[in-house]
Length: 213
Image (cartoon, rainbow, N blue to C red; front, side, top):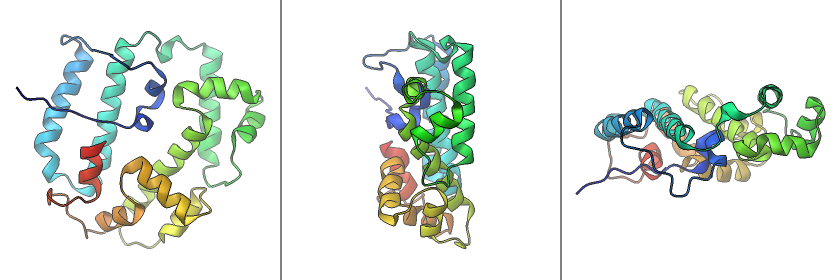
């Protein structure tokens, strides 16, 4: 008897993280469950050969498929939200993305720009894990992309953190490690080719991050 397990932090589940997931079981004839199972098998077989640049997209793909299974089985889905609330959430997300480099970005400032009360904003973002959690996740995801794309290391890690709203290197490092399972410095090593994912025995970087999600 063998099992293949995939563990994901709730932060990667997006709106699905707001659902009651305890004991959730997807029927074996569920199309979304079959797609997820097939992807997991393919990922496991190819994991030792993934490059650092490929690892992050594969993790996000796994997260998206898991969300699909959850949405298919959960009692409450995104489609059940009122149209007006969908518009507000879309506007709020656009406002947040436009100000990711602003250290003063806060629930109060987003609510003010959106023209809703703070309580209303919190209700809108509850399925997304909360306003503050969503903002930090977006900042970290953008920082991740910046590091991976800067293969020459032209931008310092302190500057990467600063550009994404972090005014403390320590806070940036802690938040980055908490979200991705590795500090930004080790991600930079992978981006610049100093870390090898094929060395699966070493507890390094994205291999561990993917394995331990």
